[in-house]
Length: 102
Image 1: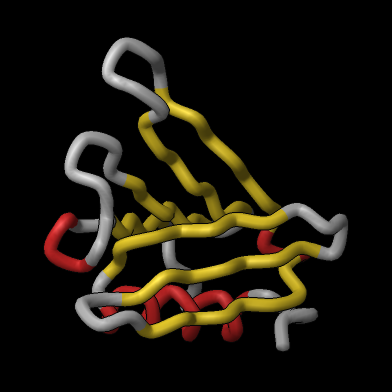
Image 2 (image 1 turned 45 degrees about the vertical axis):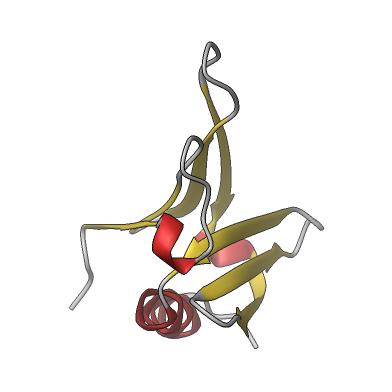
């Protein structure tokens, strides 16, 4: 059964930024990283179609995990400061729904 929308947020407890938190959003067609750039600027957003994802890597850290998502077109999403369980869940969802993912 397809999912509709899932959001994972970084946390300062897991090595994320206090002032510039990141979020990874996954819907039926895209995976999107949103991060605040600075205190007076907007939010930077990078999206990759799920069908173009070829690799997902989770790098465990002492207090959390970082995640790297690579696409067929050489685009990358690098998320930092997520909990280990959230990073594993992101990896599982993308491997399940991205046909080219290894």
